[in-house]
Length: 424
Ligand SMILES: Nc1nc2c(c(=O)[nH]1)N[C@H]1C(S)=C(S)[C@@H](COP(=O)(O)O)O[C@H]1N2
Ligand SMILES: [Mo]
Image (tube, rainbow, N blue to C red; front, top):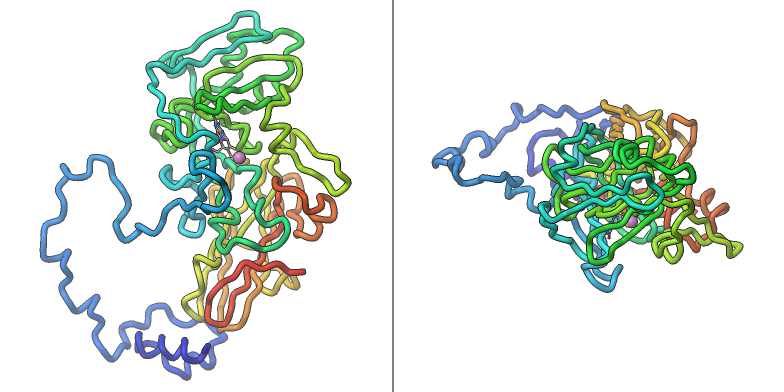
């Protein structure tokens, strides 16, 4: 099979000599087309798009990707949830470049579907343990000092389907409940300062304006440090899917806290024990106790290329690529193994490397058709090392859904196909 595959490629391209492949421990040349015997029609023939006018500037008032990129979309897994309105879809991580997730590819997680809110009718109320209860319109918020920041949002359930073993075949599905966006908005501290926190104010309750009215408790300490109330993402208004016209941005903390369609903040002296922090978003341990209020997302990483949706196509020179992130700070180092953790190499981090943001890493490697067991391991600025899955299960058991940051393994077969596997 392996031989057929490689010789098929040799005929099609007519580029590399068989002798060249046989001795292929060095990278094959990428620019050998000039030696080709047959002319390449992509060069020698005039293409359709060279013969006719393209669309004018009046045709695409809001730009969309090339039709040849139509496969790069969010995808959901129908059997995971009972209804698409209370479900999630997944970011196509294997098809991205750099660190910014395009707005239209940001995974979605809704409890009651996408609320379509008229910004003129949207209000943000702050009440409870404050000197002065306040109500803001969107215009009020837009007249306040604002900041922009790039950070990741990861659902605590990301990789949650993999606790008991490898299940979903693609990094989009195993790791795609994350996105990384530049947000613009008002620091929550400014609003809380204006309302005036009472001395016993210790917790906030953030409430959404969608049909679920989803709510979560947030310690005031975090609220006063780096929380933003964002009205923009990636330079334009929030998308409806992401909470238009206003959402909470809670850098480094689990996605569930990032309340969308934010309409109210109540200030109190203890957590609310809302549905999402009792029945959900708790971690059942092996001894029957459950962890609660596990806000921070620990360091994690995944190789996106190669991965099941992005098989290896060429022998010789290849570029391995992936993402790493940490809710506790910046990514300091990423190690990559091609042999299931026996040997590790230090990956190259691509700038910018930002605090609580997805970070892009790369590793150059040569592939000669041998099986690979690809893994990545993130180390963050606190010195925390991403654990392997066995290590994680020893502490957490197998009853958890949330906070699975174990090391992912991809098996690359001789024909270049990649499979989600687990080393046991
Ligand atoms: N109002 C409201 N806020 C919400 C949700 C929701 O259903 N309603 N889902 C939460 C969950 S569980 C996550 S993981 C994130 C998902 O954000 P996204 O849809 O922008 O990816 O939003 C959070 N905020
Ligand atoms: Mo979530």
